[in-house]
Image (cartoon, rainbow, N blue to C red; front, side, top):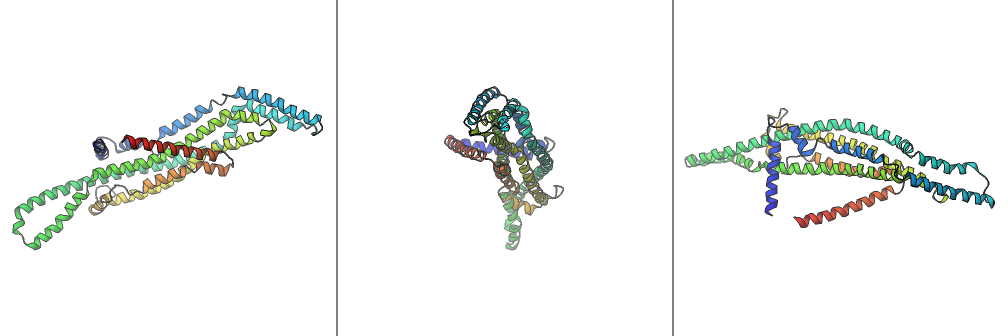
Length: 385
C-alpha cells in the first residue's frame, strides 16, 4: 500500500511539473510529444509497420521450389485422370482444360510478379486513403498542440487563483484576529460573504491530482486507439505474409479437380486482407474528422475559460471547471474510444467488399485469444500488486 502511495505522489509531481513549467525552460510542444507522442498515431510505429510489411513480403519464394515439385506431381495425376476418362469413353478430347495446369504452373514460376499484380488495385486504394488521412492528421495535430497550450494556460491560471486564495486566507485570518471584536454583526456577515467564497475556491483548486488524472485518462484513450490501429495493421501484415509465402501450395493443389477452387479462394482472401490498409486509413480519416470536431469544440471552451489571449481568465468559470474533478471536457477522450471501436470493424468491412470465408473466423479466433491473454495478464497483475 505504501509503495502505491509513493508511486502516485511521484507521478503527480512529475506530471504537474512537466505541464506547468514555463515556456522558457522547454517547449510545450516538446513536452506533449514526450508524454503522448508526436501525433495521435506515432510516426515511428507507422513507418516501422510499413517497413515490416515490405521486409516480410520479400520472402515470398521460401516454398517456391517445393510448390513446383508438388505441381509437377499433381500435373501427372491430372493428365492420368484425363487420359483414363478419354480411354474409357467418358470424356472427349478437349484442349483448353488440358492447358489449365500449365497456366497454374506459370503462376508458380512467376509468383512474385503475380502477387504484385494482384495487390496493385488494393495498393492504389491504400495510397489514396493514406493521402486523405495524412492531410487530415496535419490539421488534427495542429489543433492538438493548440489545445495543449490552452490546457497549460488553464493549469497556470488555476495555480495563480490558488495562490491568490491562499494569500486571501492568511490576510483574512490576520484581520479577523485584530479587528473582529470591534465590528458589528452586520459587518461580520458582509465579511463572511466576501471571504467564504475565497476559502471555498482555495479548497476546490487542488489541481495537482486533477492534472495527473486528466493526463492519465487522455493517455489511456489515445493508447487504446493506437493499439487498435497497430493491431489491425499487424493482422494485415501477418495474414498477407502467410498467404504470400504459402500461396504457391494453394496454386499447386488447385491443379487437381477435387481442389479446383483453392486458387480462386486464395485470390479472394488475399485481396480481402490486402484491403485492410486502405479501409483502415479510410476509417482513420473519418475518425480524424471526429477528432477535429472534438478538439475544436474543446479549444473554444478552453478559450472561454482563459480568454482568447490566454490572459483574461474567468475566475468563476474556472472554479466550476476545477470542481468537475478533471481538467478536460471529455469529448476528445470519448472520440479516441469511438475510433478504437471503429478500427476493429475493418475485417468485417473487407469481407463486405470481397466476399470470402475464413478471414472473419480467423479474426474472431484472434479476438478470443486476445481476451484470454488479457484475462491472464489481469490476474497476474492483480496477484502482483
